Image (cartoon, rainbow, N blue to C red; front, side, top):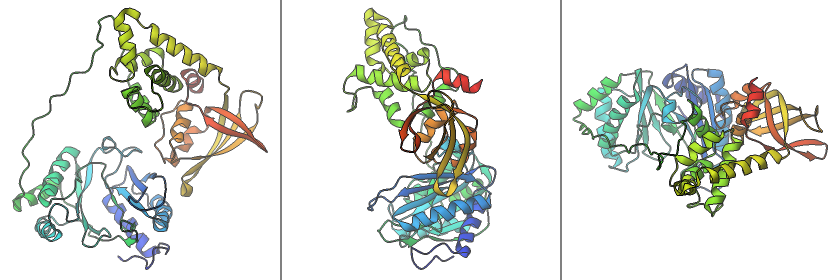
Length: 445
């Protein structure tokens, strides 16, 4: 497989078909294939990471995604990679991979010289032939893949890959959700685009065959490490403090709904926060975050009680001194009153049109409350931005992953909380408000 002669060339049908054929073979159907386009480290220019999930095995969907992403990758210094193992949902964590169908190693001459790594690898490949060899764009560097059939448990595959890459002195590649540079993309590490080429052999092996190949090459078996003693779960410091556990699924909901900075604020409180220098300011901010996410008073109490070194520090001190829940109750009450006083409207989503090529969704909405009731608003939303998650939370739905444009259909017929502004010829959404429990009950009724 050969690439275009210049980095500005559009993908030719021949090599695009080769990339698609490779992806169809190594990532099995029945789940999701993840793509990520990231800015290239160390290179000038600014861009936001873009993520896209397409049904694995869907040739037409993969082609549409590649037609967009490969052109973007060719136009500016960036890294285009893919999840070598299928995701059971639109996510990119290890928990989003249930079974391993591909394992890989990255040979780049770091731990050992390239010559030594390749000599060792040749011995393994002789015993267990590889499925795909990729020349990653840096002279001499290789990515080697084995298609595992049948798929195996992540723990079993990780043990085999870790054993191999330690022997080679290679970088870690045993993560189930591992992302690798995409065949057919450009490598911009040096500032100049180098085409990533490869060679596919449509063959598979079992994880046992690969492990046996390592045995035949006298690859050392890593000694089993004793499990670390985990710390007992924290308990409230006084027996009088009764905390109700969260309902099933609620903790996971808050993990998905809250932005990263908010989760850090809950965990650490005012410590290390430049935005909220005092504990009372940080506590008020956390209360507002949780109130806007639809948390009940008992759920807010749970987060304060379970973070003794962060948000809960001042509350627990007051409680231990005999003040009970007074400090937290007053903070929650003030925040709920403030949120209730803010101007807001609800809009009904009539249409949600995904623009896959642009990673954008256009929402057609009708205002259902206030002075502007009945007015239609057409608003574009970038599905690669964190606000996309708040749109779903506002509708009483589980948040959509960043970039999941094909999730837009879930919004049709839903009410959203928004703050409207006026712009010349009509109205404009100036802020999406996270859903409250009352709003979610209305939507779900």
